[in-house]
Amino acid sequence: MADADFAIAGAGALGSIIGAHLARAGQSVVMLVRARRAQQIMQDGLRIQGLVEFSQSVPALTDPSELTGASVLIIATKTYATEAVLASLGRADIDVAFSIQNGMMKDEQLSATFGKERVLGCLANLSGEMRDSGEVLFTRNADLFVGELDGRDSARARRIAATIDAAGVRASADPDILSLEWSKFASWVPMMVLSVITRALTWEYLIDPGTALVAVRLVREVGMLAAACDVGLSDRTTLPVAAICGESEQDAIALLRTFGLDMKSNAPEHRMSTLQDLEAGRPLEVEETLGYAMRKAAQLKLSLPLLSSCYGLVTGIDRIQR
Image 1 (spheres, rainbow, N blue to C red):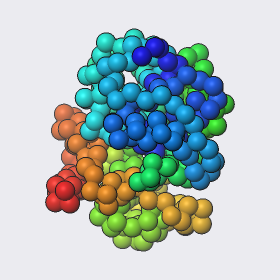
Image 2 (cartoon, rainbow, N blue to C red):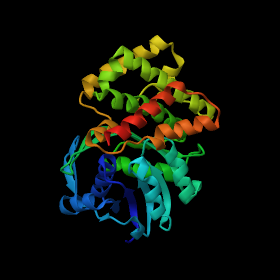
Image 3 (tube, rainbow, N blue to C red):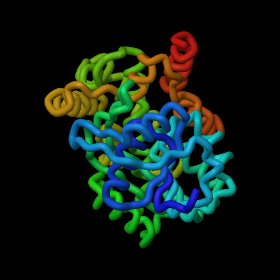
């Protein structure tokens, strides 16, 4: 396969949204996907519904080792597929790579494969849902941040962000990317856990006082882990996690419930991708997210009792439901 401007590993909801927009804007894009998804793409293109509606033809490879190179590699697979994908891409000539996956393990995996100097941090504050038909429902276009892992400003991060933003997916470069990634993780952990336990719409467990209390305490434990890694949290991601960590517990619950009420008004049908996976009988992203946090805490001799309990519970649910 000839070199591409963008190679995107994974054509689930977010990978499809980004790939379709970039290709429609004239960038050369190749999707690295499983056989069934490749067949859908070759027959019908990447089909996007919701915030925008269009279908875009994009080439697809089912064997990532056939990719010779790309200016930008975006990892958009489920976290448990990362190791295999990166192993097959080790010989490709990649200028820069980043991952829009959940959790904090992704940056370490990319750096081990391509070298830290070729890796950007990233968080994607976007939402979409993959339908059985192959269409993707694009429901939230908030922001996608990229930045250098060492905290410096860079022309390449600005250029990549500008390209994605011009294509229609809101994006910007930010040198404080590690803080943003950890803040997204602190937002994601409680919503992932509670979506699995309650199987409810997102706003429902954010406004309930009992589940909101659990969410606040989980945010605070992830905040403790981030601080132990010398990273401070920010309010510039999904939840106001810095404020949740700094306020009294009751005030933090009130903040969370206010966010939930706003989501009830503006995104009443929002469901975590974890819940979508659970209901479809697919594996959950546990070891590379919650498991990674527990392993990191153990290395730092940090006790995170609630997160530890939730990790065991979600791991058990994942095993039982499959």
